[in-house]
Image (tube, rainbow over all chains, first blue to last red; front, side):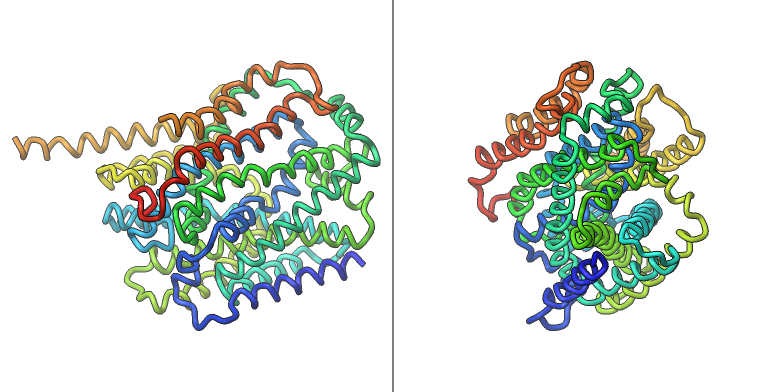
Amino acid sequence: MATAVFLGFIVFSLYLAIRSKSGRGPQSVHDFFVASRQFGAYLVFFLAAGEIYSIGTMVGFPGGIYAKGPTYGVWFLGYILLAYPVGYFIGPKIWQAGKRYNAITLPDLFKGHFQSRTLELVVAASAILFLLPWGQLQFTGLVAALKGLGWNFQPFYLILISAMLAFTYIAIAGVRASAYIAVLKDILMVAAIVITGVAVSAEVGVTEVFHAASLHVSNRMDAHQLTFSMSTMLFQSLGFYVMPFAVQNFFTAKSANTIRRTQVAMPLYMLMYPFLVVASYYAISQNLHLASPNEAFFAAAIRLLPGWLLGLVAAGASLSGLLVLAGICLSIGPIVTRNLLPNMPENKQKASAKVVIVIYLIVSIVMTLLTPNLMLTLINTTYYGVTQFFPGVIAILFGLRVRPAAIAAGMLTGQILAIILYVLQVDLGGLNLGLGCLAVNVAVLAVVHLAMKRPHVHALS
Amino acid sequence: MLKLFIGIGIPYIGVIGLLPWVASVDMTVLGVPFIYAWIFGWFVLTSGCLMLCWRLFDCHFDDAHPDNN
């Protein structure tokens, strides 16, 4: 029964993908990747929520608070929440810059503002590099969700099916398909989480669940944990909207005010989290022994929900992984064809991007199978690396005349330093490593900029 | 500046700035530990702050305004 309901939703998602294209002729490259800047507030909202609340919401977050309690939960919820005020202020400016430079990708903005091929290449290459672990995480989560359905296939087949579905969505209508499917996914995900949370509350009781959890994980934080939580919330809330796919989402909006209105509503979507927290603590309250903390949410769903509802939960979880995967594909494809490869004409970019996407998916599958743990270890580096784009983006949005070489030097220093510190497991008293690297990034940027300015001043005098 | 304070300042102070105090409070709100209740509350409050920015400042300008075009 669970499988039948699940497959029903997947078929419906394919129908939505086809519907999203109906009545339109052949799509231009701008329409395929950023919907020709035509989306209204509702589609921008659903697309953003669709790509923000990835499969990590139902797998990683429950596992984190199951194992570590509020120490993990607070920074995770806090950085997403605080990203929305940032988005309210920089989102409209990103949209304006996108319009000014007719951009499709994040590196397009750097190319347009700084007129530097080197900087464009640095941003494009590092964007792809740091997105790889993010995609990998979705595959791992998808396997967990499909196993929750009781499917006993080899992970290889589950991953292959997921990759083919994500590609099919994109191949049908690009970002338009993503946006339509996002509406279904966002509704299913909230329904799945609220239903499971309510089931746990009814079965065990809210007070009892939290009481049982507090015996295992402390509700207090020591100085080290506080430093980590506060610095991570600050750092990741800045990186959130310079993620390459998040920037592309802003480009789909039809006006700057569309973006402001979506940001006002975004925090309210998080009201699903109280239900998720209750559901995640079910396993603790029942003294269940989980094979992995990542099963914390599904453990509750499997034990408390009838088969058909479990199918709905699995569909919500799977679609969240698939949409994020599709979003990453829609981001990497044009970054390669527009920014990495030189001089490809626009009318060839769409077809070439599809080839790039297939190659990306195949490489990802091979890496997931060969080095399953490597990518999960590197997942933390996604924010370390991507947030280093922030100073450059600010320079673009406020029209600051900074030397492109200074931006590139700061960015590369920040990114390389972050990887080194992460690999060496350096402890800065709990301070988020990426935040330290961002400070170094800005310092290098300022020094290089001033150093390059001096001869210019002499020439004038 | 007032817009920045309402939209960014208040949520950041509430969520990050007050965290050391929040983490030291030992009570529950309707059975929910205070630290969770606090952050859940900010889901609504943050949306409220942004709604204020929208109503007080931004909704008065149409798409031809320099901030929107």
